Image (cartoon, rainbow, N blue to C red):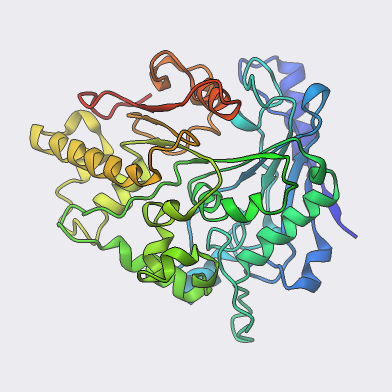
Length: 390
């Protein structure tokens, strides 16, 4: 029997929002559902606990539409890293430790904050495997009790959602932020395969287009990290076979090599100056051990002319990687120049903040227009716009 967990803290926050009338956005409260039945299928978190999700039911004319948004939270690439991850109090390795997450931005139930999807069934798929839902290793080391079962978790959660109403969906979106955004790319066709032929299914990854580009040293240091993730979790079998048959499977963890094999319509939300990629791909410690780029990447107004040029060079390489999605009208993009990471979960960035807009359109409007096929949305910010705080 599945169970729902409702922490007392959420009641106190709700009371404060009502009584104090604070000038803040008080998000809706959505319970966590634990899928106990998934354990028998081996679909478990790193620590062996059952997977989980949060569902806020749709209403009105959105009652038969579903948006499944995958939580982000990086990856674990070594045994020690994964052992630590399963003890983290953010629940990224165990449903026993998951806090309740708020619904903002693309998950909001308010029309003036989320005009196209506010009344859909909105799901927050909780992330607890460390492989962007691609891992599947049968063996469990009794010494560490680590379970690498991300692909099974994805299947178990989607099957549960189909059971509770998603099977009858007229429209469906798979989205996600960061590692969840990557998961929404790598699992896009798999998600589509669960639905009836008449259902309109599309994918909207946010800040999940991690680019395989040269770093500050001129090398590809981050590539080794992805190689370890794919190897440890046994992910290769769950990456696009057309890609893995032609190159090192670890490279197929990069969207630019995977998207040519994805058939489902997909819309890329990303900043050309994504902070996570600047910190961890362009100028990681391995790529910049002397820290010569540190001051610039942490404080933009401290950047020299040559350092700003390095940002622009990264933008060009990133856009080259994004071009792999091809020219089909079923593939869209919204690439701005905000110096940030993950924008669809940020209410003001999603629908409100002028500095996040492109051509006077918010992300929410762009995604809605593309999903309902009002416009072919392939918008990229002006090449002369430098990274800026939005």
